[in-house]
Length: 98
Image (cartoon, rainbow, N blue to C red; front, side):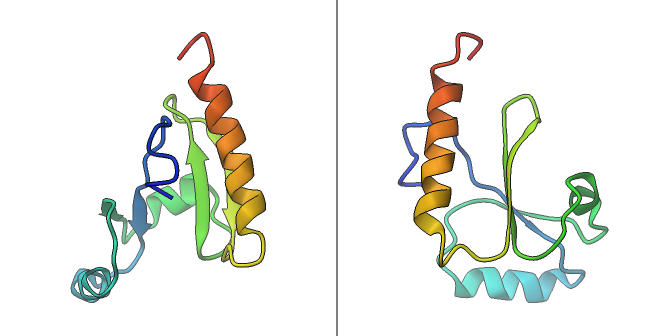
């Protein structure tokens, strides 16, 4: 995703809710993660964005407004979701207030 939208106003940040940071760090090291991972063991961010299930994905604009919310894995609808994100990012990028 990061490569796909590299020319857009887009950043990926993962929020890990694990209470055991050592286990979370071990998992992160075992994956090819090329974006920052924040730790939120009290789930404050999950509460703020009313997470309904895991994994959850959100597109939040530069002003902190929630623009897109997805719950679950992307396997079956990946292309549709990527198209919706691209469309929204194009609108944001071309917005006169940007």
